[in-house]
Structures are given as C-alpha cells and as structure tokens.
Length: 573
View: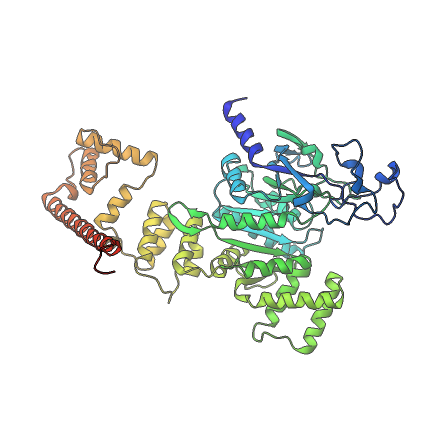
C-alpha cells in the first residue's frame, strides 16, 4: 500500500465515526415480567435502538442491573447518552450485482449522524474527486413505491438529468431502491449516459435502515452488493444507479429519518461554496418534489422559509403531497383563503390521502397555507399542459427566480452553468435594471471562462467590444491565470524580448505587440509597438502611479489623524 493510500485511509478513519448502542433501554416490558430475565425473554425484548438484547455487546459478563424491570427509573433512550462513537469501519466501493447492462459502482462511507458538513464536503471533493457543484438538485418525495403517470415520469426523468448534466449539478436523494430515489436511479439509467465522472448522484441514507448493511463492513474495500431485497423485510436496499453514498449512523437499527438533519446541514454548507472561482455567487439549490407523505409538507415549508429561500419545484400529478401543494397553489392564486365548502372538501381529501384523523388533517392544512405565504418560491409543473416549457429549463428558471437573487447574481448563475438560453430568456430581458459595470464584469467573466455563446448574447444586448476592451481590461485578460496557456504566453514574450521574465511579471500590451510581430516574422507592425501608442501608454501609467500615490498620502494623513485622537494627551479628548 502506497503512502498516499495509507494517509487517505487514516484521514477517513480519524475524521468519520460509526455509532453503536452501549446501553440497553427496553422499548417495552409489558409482555416480559419474568425475573430474573431468562434467555428466551432476552431474545424477544428490543432496545429503543431497535436491536434485541442479545445483539448488544456488554463489557460485563451479565447485562447491567438496569435491564431488570423495576430496578430503576424509566430512561429515555438518546443518541448522546446511550451510543458510543468509534472510527468508521465501513468505506470503499460498492459493486452493484443486478445491473448487468453496465458497470455500476459507487463510493460509500459510514458516517455518524453528528458528522461535520465541512468534513463531508472535503471527502466528496478531495477523496472521491467529485467535480465542484454548480447547482444542487435536492429531490424529496415518497419513500415507499408508487406509480408515476407516463407523462410525469418522462418529464421528471428527462428534466432532472438534462438540468444536472448541462449545468454540472449534484443530485441528492435518500439513495434507497424504493420511492422517488428509485425513479431518480431509473432517470440516471435512461438519460445519464455512460460517463461515470458526470454521475454525481448522492444518496444520503440511514445506515441502520439498509438491507444487508453488514456486507458493507470493511476498510477501503470493494464490496459486491445485491439491490434486490427481501420483500418481507422492513429495511431497504441501496439504489444501484447512484454514484456516491453517505450512510448516516445514529446507532439505531431499522429506523428511518436520522439522515434528514445531516442532509440539511450539508446542503446549507454546499450553498456557501463559490459556484465558480471567478464568481462571488454561491451554489444555488432547488428542491424537487415528487409525490410524498405528510413529512414532505414540513420539508417544503423549511425550504421556502429559509433566508434566502430555497425554491421548490413541484411535479403536479405525481400524487399525495405534491398534488396537495399544486391544488392549493392554484386555488389561492388570487385570494389567500379557500371558500368554506372548498376548504371542507380539501380537509377530507388530506385525511383520505394520508390516512389521518381530522385534527392531523387540520394541522397539515395550516402547514400548507404557511407554504403559500412563500408562493413566489414555489413553482408547479403540469406535465399535461401544452404551453409548459421544457422541464429542465423550467427547473433552472425556478432556481433563478425563487432565490430572490439580483439580476447580476442570476447572470452569474447562468454563466457558471453555460446556459445562454436561460440568460437570454429570463435575465437579459427588456426593462431589467442593471448596476453600473455589472454587464462589463459579466463580459470579462465570459471571455475568461470561454463562454462564447454568452459573449454573443451580451453583444446582441448592447455591449460594444471597442468600448469594452480598454487597456486595463485587455491586460487583465492577458494576465488571467490560465495554467499552461499563461506559461506558454510568458515563453513567447521571453523569446520575443530575448530575456528571462522575473517571477510574477505583469504582461503589458507592448509585450503583446512584440509577440505578434515575433510570430508573424516582421511582416506586420503592431499598433502596440508604435511610438504614439507607447507615449499614450506611458502617460496612462504615470497618471495611474500619481493616483496611487495620492491615495496612499491621503490614507497616511487619515491614519495619523486617528492615532492622534486615540493618544492620551490628545487635545480632542
């Protein structure tokens, strides 16, 4: 094993942990009142963590006395008090066995529920070599299997993957082989292509709820995994068309939901990252809702009430929570309150759809109404409508409009995605107010990032290259760090000037003129090397130096003034 592999293994095991229950707290003693606790009862009693008594490991030869009924006060099981963290023992590569049509492998790691999002992102970027995201598509919906109408399925599958591939997005799901995560896997299979580096589909899944999770135990291992689970089991299999898995461990077995808190923290941390090294804009996110149970209503409310909000894109016709959101969004477009008879029917519909009592239906109705208070951040996509735009374009438009970003920030997003069509349709529109210099900065970014289509539409929208390409901007472009290209340009200048350039040398337009003449071989005289240009360039440099000297002098005077004010003997005190 190489030094790099050893350091990588040690970093993962030093940074990420598993959690195991170390204190048996019985979930119920009602059926097992025998004292002392016989072996048969030990095999029947479950801890609050979901494991049987015999599935716990004890340091003592006998279970603690607190296991016996009546031996002490009732305790409430908690992750903090009753689980122990130790270095993770499950990470490596999964080889999915039921996808014979193509090679499907995924990176995975078992992480504690209280893992730091900064460490998780470092794992994904540095260890897993994932490309930095330019958009976060977080998919929420039903976890149980459901049937999507063909048109909705086609719009969701093609729209999601086209939006992801065209922008360089990450897709986040629960990662299981049922419900909406399975539909995401099918979308990747159908529309994702064979380029594994572009499959940034991350499953954030509860470790204890995974079928055959013991097969994944091992450090830096390659593990075959079967996605076809036991139909009688309450645990779920991983979906074979995800590319990466964060397996969230809270010490429980067979219980869902522990991943949501960590997923939310990770999403917020990703949004703080730069969308591109040249741009100050953070990574935008959009929540895509397909079907879903009662918990999805609260999830949507959390997203849209964030500051800034995370826009929500709802596929109407997918069922349950998505359809309730779509119905209320349309019915309250003009008036925020439903008519009494419509409200009554809607409450009955909520109860029937989720199988809940009137009280719970009323509570869900209140949450849905609160979602509508942020209706500008919710977009309803009707696959049956003939005047709907393409689903991928609709998802990206929702992302731009739902975040309350300024026009310049929206343009930065579209520029990072290289989606000139979105910028032309939604950003560079008549009547849009632009701050002074924002379009010039966008043109500079487009040139440096090699976004040819953006250069064209900016020119079409009034940018004049003869006015834009000032001496300062041209020199900024020539001195932009571009790896091999910049080094090659420096070598050309050295050849043309027959000298060695010092480290950090700033290329000038006069240098560029010499390079042009050197490459053409004396058959052309560059404007940049003529006397009148050199004289004008020298005057401009002198003015720039004078301005810098003036600013430094003024700053020195101000600094001296404030120091005198702060001194004990100052007359100003």
